[in-house]
Image 1 (cartoon, rainbow, N blue to C red):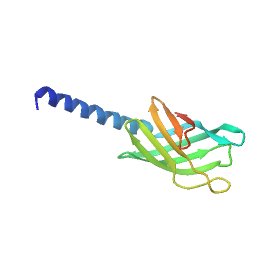
Image 2 (cartoon, rainbow, N blue to C red; image 1 turned 45 degrees about the vertical axis):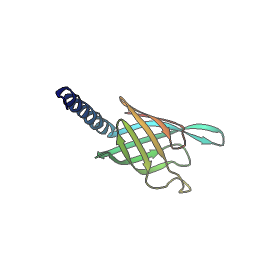
Image 3 (cartoon, rainbow, N blue to C red; image 1 turned 90 degrees about the horizontal axis):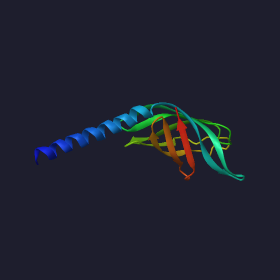
Image 4 (cartoon, one colour; image 1 turned 90 degrees about the vertical axis):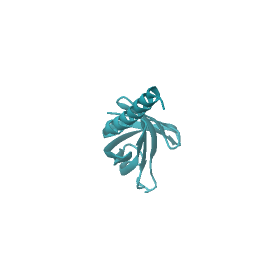
Length: 127
């Protein structure tokens, strides 16, 4: 391996590590926003607050509060953070009938998390 190749490899590894560490650091805290869900009346926005308590070795832990729907309530959440992507899912069912859950596939964009629900509907959270 040439010296130039070795230097490029070191820089690539350093940048990849910094990006992953930055995503983990930025993901923690309180995020507020909404997601779209399908109802009998079509797609409707649903308020959401996600509190990410910790991200260790890419594993996320926290809680979510869903507002204004039959699924309203507090839920424990878990997920993964890697390469600027944040995946969050409820770890318990809830809501009035006890059959609600949530899955989010998000991308970290500055102070926003944007993406979709598990059903493919838009979701966005911000600090």
